[in-house]
Image (cartoon, rainbow, N blue to C red; front, side, top):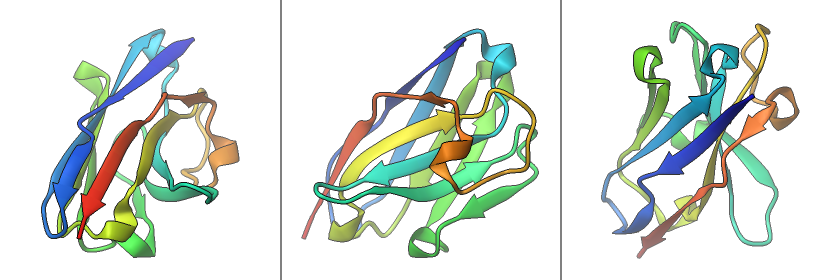
Length: 125
């Protein structure tokens, strides 16, 4: 089974940019599609972006469309999320997730099998 670990979170100001990484370790051959979700205090888990195993299909939530880039480097078993023009409403714990089998790319958290612990992103106004 693979393990996921996020990094790159922190405190930034509105309008700043931030890059997050999600490194897979362990049985990385079992990592297929990957995605980013976020959870703000008192709110449910929200889809942010997802990328297919080969990186050729990508989905983004409307809330981050135009100011986010998702990518992955399979040779390094790492996925990335770069966000620009950050807003206070982007404040949340950002979690990466991975599917353990080949399936259609999904925006639903229930379609992901491995999860990282999350990294806090705080955007001040």
